[in-house]
Image (tube, rainbow, N blue to C red; front, top):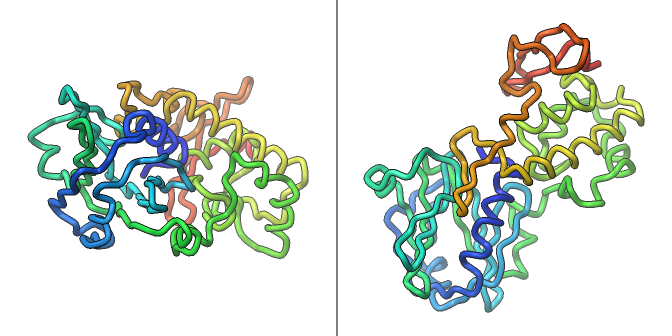
Length: 289
């Protein structure tokens, strides 16, 4: 499942492609996604212009004129293809190399745009979804209203962190992955954040000292920014519309590194893998306290 950096790259990939294009038609090949597509609602965007695309947590938000917003979650295998006026097809999400024969049977929704261009939502496993909202109702959505602050925003700071964990009895990895605490983090980046922070994933949050909290916040922001700049992590052959492949996976220090030597200088320990809340967890038993 794509995490914050990968969704951010998808957003950036599509902004320049779709800006000010008008939806001419919507073709629904298969609306049976995680939530069945509301045909009457989605066809209301016909004739509307793309104004901007933003991201909230792991959601993409397409803003049209007339205050209409399309909320998209990519699920496990959801992705967008963009076809320009020269019929060149660009990949914008997780999947293998473009294969016209295989891709077509998983093209769930096709948005025909102005200038003979197309935006295609493709989803093999159909765990993603698309919903439409009035802009004024977006914050009331069950997907949005309970989300915590964005990790790259100033609101995600030491005072917020310390206040939130007061009286709670959870391990640090679980709370970092809790979207109500902070929005957009997933398993890959939480493993990396805790490694650089020197904190064992199973540590109880009430046992964290102030210096450790500040390190977690610092490396959350630093690692996410670096991952975005490197195009995300190509666990499933992600690439942007420019064809640039995500390369952050080449810089993983612990994720997927079971049995490999710790990357900290003079540390001779090997990376351990355990499961916390049924999620694969990687860490160095010596460097992470």
